[in-house]
Amino acid sequence: MRWTGLLIFCAALVLPQTYAFGAPDTAYLADLTDKARRLHLADRPEWLKLVHYVPNLVEPGVHGLVDSPPFYNAPDGKNNPQSELEATLASFYSEIEETDKQQNPQCLFIARYTWLKEQLGFDPQRLPQRECKRFRQWHASLNPGGMTIVFASAYLNSPSSMYGHPLLRVDAKDQDEHTRLLAYAITFAANTNETNGLAFAINGLFGGYPGEFSILPYYLKVREYSNLENRDIWEYALNFSPEEMDRILMHAWELGPTYFQYFFFDENCAYHLLGLLQVARPDLDLTSRFRWWAIPSDSVREIVRQQNMVKDVVYRPSSATVTRFRLAGLNDAERELVKGLSTGQLGADDPALRALPGARDAAVLEAGEDYVNYRRAIGKTDVADPGELEHQLLTARSRLDVAEQSPAVPVPEVHPDQGHGSSRVTMGAGRRDGQGFQEVSTRATYHDLMDDDRGYARGAQIEFFSLAFRHYDNYATRLESFTPIEIMSLSPRDEFFQAMSWKVSAGLQRVRVADGTQPLAFSLDGGAGGSWSNKGDTALWYAFFDNSVRVGATMLNGYALGAGASAGGLVDVMPGWRVHAFARSLRYFAGQRDTPWTYGLSQRVTLGRDLALRLDLTRNRELNWYYNSGMASVLFYF
Image 1 (tube, one colour):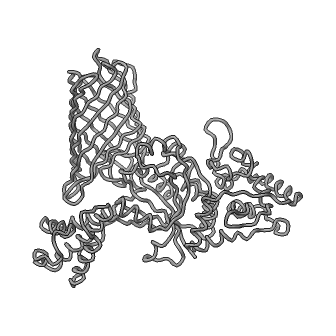
Image 2 (image 1 turned 180 degrees about the vertical axis):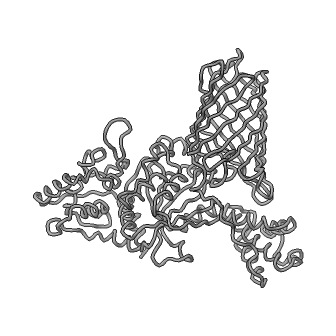
Image 3 (image 1 turned 90 degrees about the vertical axis):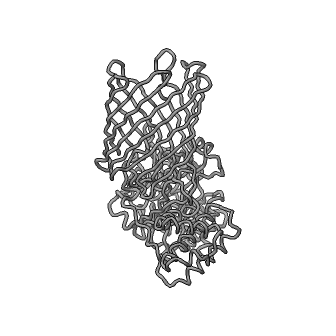
């Protein structure tokens, strides 16, 4: 039954809806329309949410975010809530019969129909109600008993998931901990097969893809997030009544065959999932504060902020997190045994393994089996039959009469919704080459290496639309830098995990030219390398091979092309105090030739979740100009 319901829903996604109108009871329709006007139903938040109207940015009025023309019943329905409501009422008189290829408007717009019926009290003799068999079967197949927001943590190697990804899980009434993977998940995503990260980012910025809701078995998303992409999962159980869950599901049914223009920053997975959830309650307003950008972690924070909306939070570590935790409990000799077992170089009956005490033998076998699963999930093919190897390790472990050796992975102290705010304003003062200055900078989103990691992915820097203004004591205030994008991924390497670290940034920055001035120039920088962590995860070192392109009208030949290297280390001296030492050297070998370098030391002290102090000191060289720079600043997150 549940798979039948899924097929019905999928059919609704792709089949176009066409319907003819029957002869309405014109007198009763006029009465309903007049009553709706007197009650101002078209201005009510419930109606505006159901049709996804938002205020226009400049001119008065509203517009609908849905871009599928069939979603609107009136020709001007995208911009006229009153006209759309009246056309929707008229559509309910359609005589079309439900088939596998079409629905009656009462069923196609079942959330609108149900709400208008509640407000206007439809007379079933004058406006007969349709059975809506397809929706009823789909609803029964879901058997909703609860709903859970599932947040998959950030995954930098996928441009569509670098902020994390939320989805809505529909938990069945008869579901328990052992069968929750059989639930269904409702998710919103760009409909594209694009595999080029740069192309996806560009098209996503400008609405180049249709965004669509879909429903699929939850275990498929768990496999994608937890195993294949090594992303920890957080589950936020929602405190919705059966009536509220029904409103959400009815609206999800309405949205099945529609599409929105997908925009990476604002009209994305986080924003539209909030739009779906807020139809549950008339007083819920989850989307209005995300007019310019919507970050998945911020959307979860907004859900948690609502009174009486979240009743429980569960953390589920990824397979990579579990494996790292098991390996951390082994000594060097035991880790070598795990490496040999998981690659088939050692057998489960190896004398070195059997020489261990029973408890340690079990710990090695458990870690080995986990690592085999991890390698299989990421596509390693150097083991002929990983399934058989896993079976051998499990069989050997079952012969040992000892308890499980690795305790559960501890839940992080700070949840994703409890980290610092993703936007930031910084105010600072300092000196450069003997000149005093004051600086104000802002960042739209989201986290950098010097920010407090709690609630965020460690070693991940993702910043969009950073802007800095600086006033020197003997100069006018000027734009110091504008960086639309800056990303750095530091994935620690060891004998088991061999991820590549990388970085990229693009924007405007001040550069020195031959006459000594410092105009703005476009800069594109990137690099690839590696990073390493200590056993206690209190330090993180990195090294990169860098490349750089600068373009500016006042530069010699108008550009500079160079390459070089950079390295650094981040050390958490104590909770809330981070130190970052770094150095970078480049050689621009084409265009404006130069060999600039910089080295420095930064420190950050956290005073509260959304408040920190920072000190930055550097020594620099650029076009034979040597200078020192230092700035102390206070950081406000929101």
